[in-house]
Length: 216
Image 1 (cartoon, rainbow, N blue to C red):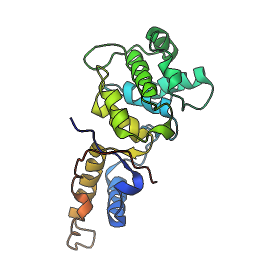
Image 2 (image 1 turned 180 degrees about the vertical axis):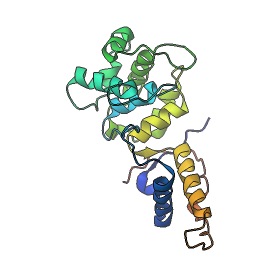
Image 3 (image 1 turned 90 degrees about the vertical axis):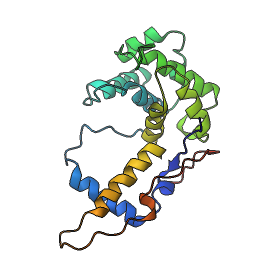
Image 4 (image 1 turned 30 degrees about the vertical axis):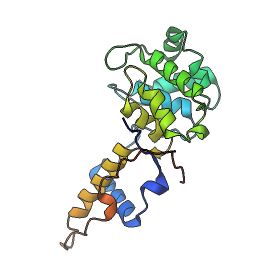
């Protein structure tokens, strides 16, 4: 299976009209109260990995419950910025201890193992691949190959991981384009004809990449 292509934000949204349409659509279609929405974790690869694994088939929760509680428990344990994946990889042989620290013993889809163990195994694989911090996410193929090789994890886990670090995977990009297209198709308040769809509304071609492009 080909590795999905990942874009930096500037690469993904190259059309100003597309960005304007997407922002307008979000403002009109989604509630203004967004305090419980999933946050991003810029330059915090540990938090992004925990988020990606523990959000699968789970309630995201408030800052004190659900996924964010898991990340906060880990942050309290670490006592520092969460951008050293080797700290999670250290629990690959003692996943029960990690589950205890995180206060969560949920299991991955398919019931293969706990999410804590899957996180530790993914972290160990990333470290082995030379991806131990957010700054080393230069090889999309490497991160994708590692994460999707863990039973119970998959492409959605990988895409959530890179998204929380500020990168756009193919599914997210396609959905964003569809949202913008939907907005473009609606006539404005003065009943004018809808604007034509820009080229960027169409799904991006899925090519095998050589690297992640991060130009934000």
